[in-house]
Length: 248
Image 1: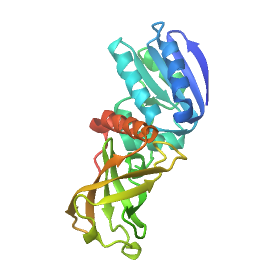
Image 2: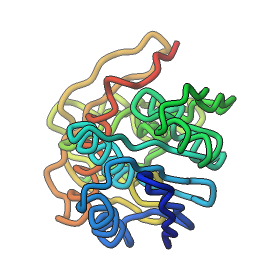
Image 3: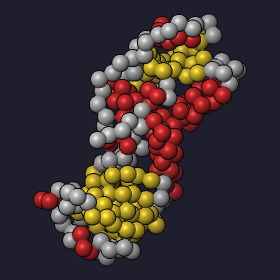
Image 4: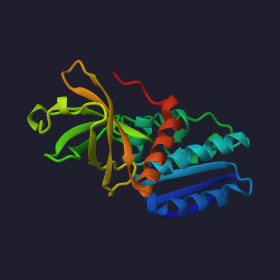
């Protein structure tokens, strides 16, 4: 990750490059804070060369926007890459930020001109909100089964099982309230390469119309680093929850 800066009058244009992930979050946050601390409250983030962004970075962008708005300024986005357009659409971020097709249009916007925002045909990606595959086993022993995560919260996960009738390895009737299970999953929007391995217990279950069961799992054994990442993801999700597009 690196950031190029250009000032156009009162507007600061930051062009971000590469992958914005956990490894460079603190460095990036410190740089962004140093840019706006002197009172430069008109900020344009050019995202054309951003190949990946995780939830913690999105959360900081939203927090920065709230801060600048409180100071009479604004953060806008320009030239989002295809990957970023999908993220923006999925999280409803076009209701948080004005999104423009070029830096020049962003500068004109700050000058008071009425500029059209970027129209994107990007599709919603449920995985960004937490929907991804996971594997679990009963801690007492036995096979590992496949399930579909529905939501990830700071204190637990809701998942659907069985998600695939051909991959039923554990009898759903065994997953009673209080049953201890171990789960593992990857969630790229939290951390692109990390595998989460957690233990906990079934809190409750609900039968679904499609014949599957929705289970709520609560963590009881999770390492501090994993918990910190999950909590950051949950905070970002809470921030954008009012803006999420409605899905059928």
